[in-house]
Image (cartoon, rainbow, N blue to C red):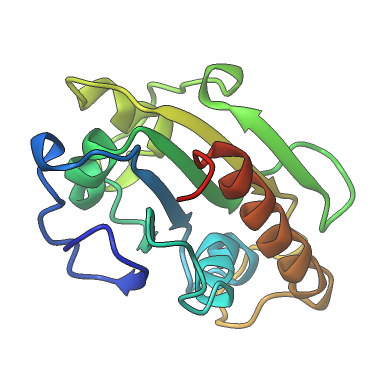
Length: 172
């Protein structure tokens, strides 16, 4: 994998060695379970980017495979994570939080339940992490987003572009 413009699915191959990079690396990760409707909103957002991210940005559909993405997280300088977030708001509400604002719940029964915040503890070098959360409406088996959350996806995509633009050094 290189730092070129791409949207990747599955197969989270090795990242570019940090010593060969001269620009900060921005990683956008879509999190969630596509089989649980609104829980998969992060993956839907990354798909909505349609490969239209700057060269210095890597957008990846991580889904629930956070452990498989550890090398990408560790190699990044800044991570923008998109996921469903139950915070008690109206469905479709978009939240922006730093990883330090999110509670790490150490109650996972297995590595399959490891979330992004818990996974950060495995890294030797921690990137700056911003989380864009979307309040879900429906968490049940199914592949389609609820109409409310589906309507929020373009707004989240725009927020991704704004955040990435603010993070990128001028001219990159």
